[in-house]
Length: 55
Image (cartoon, rainbow, N blue to C red):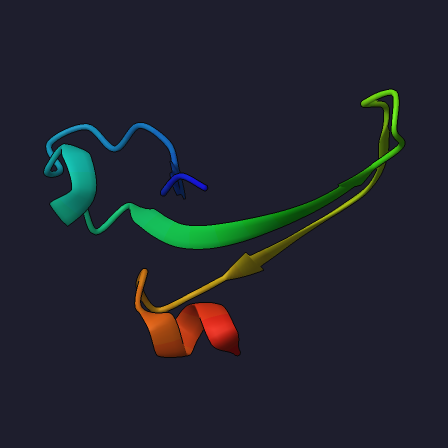
């Protein structure tokens, strides 16, 4: 598991985790035993906290 932020370039904006131009999200991936991707679902969260991840 790793944390990630979805966003893009915003000239003049802040960089990194504190950027108002980025949103934290969780991705769930289902794959075959051989490692081939079957399904992926991404969900925006308020932050990387246990309650958010559990929901």
